[in-house]
Length: 191
Image (tube, rainbow, N blue to C red):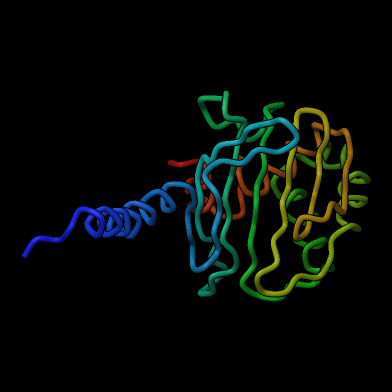
């Protein structure tokens, strides 16, 4: 049995769509327990590429999925520098604003010398006051665009400051020498 060419071409096109489209989509995003992150992002004229992604586990729970991006023209991860970068975290459990503030302040205090923390303490407290409660599926994004540190919840900016020192300290919570989790940091940095 031979199919006429007019029927064969649509069939081939359909088959190609079924097999190639999912592959192309898989290369354009990563998925972690239902949280999807694109591999490339364009924002305000800046191109970012995904460096790494992973799951942060707290005790025995999957707490959140994360993805770390950096300016596309930067070949090596540089999470504590002046390089444009962003960190997206999608939460799997509800967390209060007060818990975010306490965790931020405690983690920074524990990971820095007392003198270094005291130099940024008031700025950390001002940042922490902007946290909002999150529900499962909510997403925070911390970004440094080369001039401005921003925190956004579900795409709505809740904090902005021209403060590279604070940006480096905050990125250090997940990506520094003493992060919340070594495995999570290494996954975000593509190690």
